[in-house]
Amino acid sequence: MSDTPKSIPRISGQNFDPDIIKARQDFITSETGTEIPHLSAMTIDPATLKGNIENPIGAGQIPIGLAGPLLVDGEYAKGHFYVPMATTEGTLVASYSRGMRILSAIGGVKTTIVERYMQRAPVFHCQDARMARELGKWIESNFSTIKKAAEATTSIGKLSHIEGYGVSRMWFTRFNFTTGDAAGQNMSGKAAQAACQWIMDNLPADLGKVTFTLSGAIDTDKKHSHLNTLHSRGARVVVEAVLPRDLMLSITRADTRDMYRARQISMLGGMLAGTTNNGVHAANGIAALFVATGQDEANVAESQAGLTYVELLDNDDLYWSLTLPSIIAATYGGGTGLATQRECLEIMDCYGTGKVEKFIEILAGTVLAGEISLSAAVVANEWVESHDRHGRNRP
Image (cartoon, rainbow, N blue to C red; front, side, top):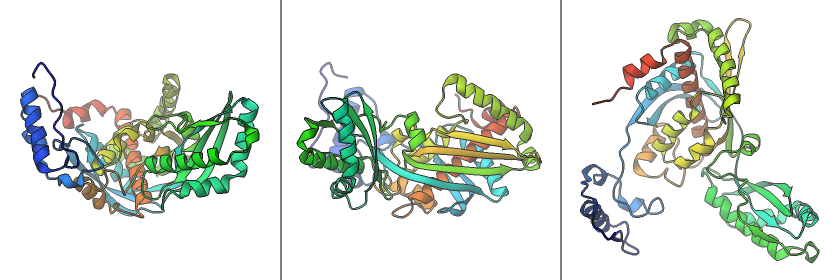
């Protein structure tokens, strides 16, 4: 690399043309001495990348495995699905497939979407706490007009409700939007900004001087919070199944009574650690599906939160449920329309409008499959052995 760093080659308005991409590829080889034959050998049409990335030099190739079939008994997803999972972790796809085999054998995983909202959280700065409280009341009484101002910015987003929290001389809010098949962060931000501007333009004089910041951070964008566990961010989805003891013994060699006891231990350990998910590894399945299908991968930070609840039934079958309160996903817009990502969504018939709830239910069922399989492997003392068999890739 040269002593004086050089600027990355760019051409205004032509940054996705093949010639400028080739110039950047040559540039990075010249500056670092690294040849990039695999990065540069992409099949994606560069013209489709605008709006998804800046200064492209190629595309990364992440292995994608196929798990399944997964039988889903949902309100939007019904039937068997094959699930593409992007990962470099050996054993992962095999483990999820085993969990899917179990769920399919019992007639499918039951999925329920409780609600789905995307937030932006403006905070209003007032002269004192009483003025902040009165502002909150004024916002509540003018909700219908604020809603109209917000929705004027989008043909899809709808303002459902506004939460309000008084702290010091500030009024923290959470604007909750429905966003169709898009994840909706940018949509919600634009709509909330328009709503706040209407509020600023129409505030009565007796509320004094008020200013606002578009995000007061209680939307907790791309980081988890307990508030999102309680109030949901993205989709709140519940998946549940009853695992027969004989079936679990035959497929996993794990006794449901031992699995129930293991869950009690995990609950205690999770409390001790202060975890945001008292399950096993929800982030594994979520990340693998997010990368494969063009989701915003940073949303794994929120989406991985989960609440596991189990009951050992009188006949020793095991009821298992997992509540995922913050699944942020899309089947339209963002990275979902890129070539390989679209293909992965199409494998599940989940690309385009009217498909996001179906995708969320398949995703949630996939996560439960992984929870059951890994938990059984730990209980049956086969966890290390399975990784030795499937997960070794060393020189």
